[in-house]
Figure 1 (cartoon, rainbow, N blue to C red):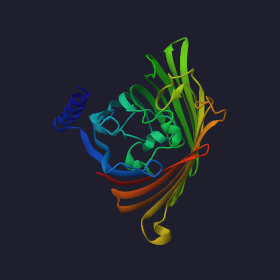
Figure 2 (figure 1 turned 45 degrees about the vertical axis):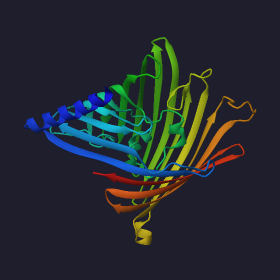
Figure 3 (figure 1 turned 180 degrees about the vertical axis):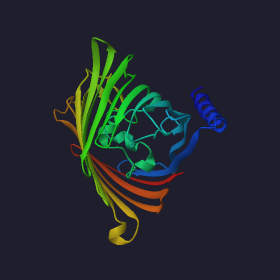
Figure 4 (figure 1 turned 90 degrees about the vertical axis):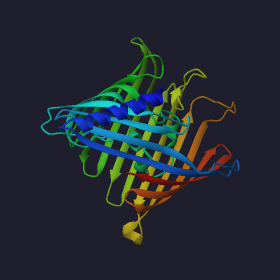
Length: 332
């Protein structure tokens, strides 16, 4: 049923865009092919489609734009509605197609429907073409995952700040409320923070999550860093297996574009992250901290096509797990 719903959204959106004289239409998409090998378990995954998404954005008039997307869910091996929302642009004097990810043009807007939840900075990199390395940071994997939900979002964007407030379905049978705030007043440097709380009722907050993040960008390199601390959220869902515990983690990522240095369009990505839980899951008496070291090397075949290789090592107490992953990404 969800697959049929997704196709109907895209079909209806396309028909409206072709029959409305004022409409601006943009059709984009991407897919990637991935292959992984686990050295610790001696497991070979074979080649498979990792992500696939088809996006349709269009504007009806100066104030209103809409978007819909269908995507392949590689965990459940099915196609589903990834995005479906209406964007209302207050005080607009010209048409604006709302971007799927980052808010860049100065405006005040309202978003209603299903969208990527603006929290921290990793939501800008859910799509494989937007991620210079193949895997998610460990703190995202262990908390919110690819967080897309249905609700309403209000945002204000200008050259120096971006404020986003939203209410969406909660991890419990309630509502999740929170916001994201980013300051860009210093050249090549951004700092931000975010908070979200999950309410079963007005007087019952079940869990929460906070983030503090930094971004620094120059022509040939980028540095990202984020610290997350949370209660009651684990592995992209409510922590229902135990008394809600406190979890925290951090990652630091650097990306270097090597074209100017070696005359070839390679890019190098280095990331370190850790994840720590107050709960002693294996009853060893030791802190359950996971350290993850990730190195990635990529090559730009074309502006819209790249190949990457990633080596990832998870260190847990005296155990080490090694994975190597190769990927080709194509966007259109």
